[in-house]
Image (cartoon, rainbow, N blue to C red; front, top):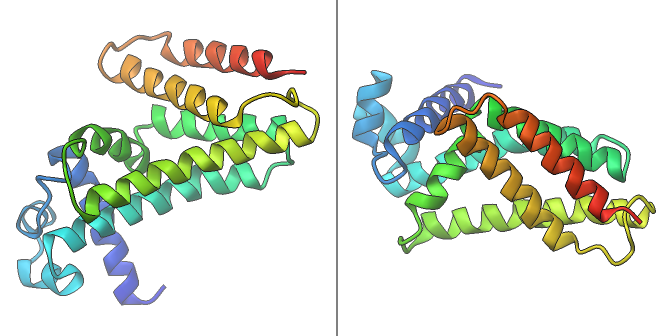
Length: 195
């Protein structure tokens, strides 16, 4: 990676952390300049506008999540083992409070009433994730690991619900059993989908 892209990636790491702390709405070139101890003009040269910065932050967080969760799952054999790897990776980034995973949870609530390109991108990202989970689950159906009439979209919805629950149980309720509860819920979801 050359100096320009490496610098931009470092800035975006800080920007994702900042957006997690202040929200996407609170993220601006000025706020990022203060938190990263960089000049506004230097950051403006990288992004040009608050909206461009927000979109770049979503893209960076999405790429981080893909690298940590989706790619390792897709490298696993098709079927139940791929579904398990997807869940394991997603749970890991949720438990670790990975910048990509956590930002999307917070932004989903924050941007609920927004209009414009940033919200539209967030919606696309969430839909892409649901479609990916449904597709991964579908390979389990085609491999005979899950019932032929199992609903991939429902599975994606239910899996997302488990991970949202563990995020809140750990973060807000400080439930020491949150991870175990998530695993039990996931096992029940798999059992319900078996042929």
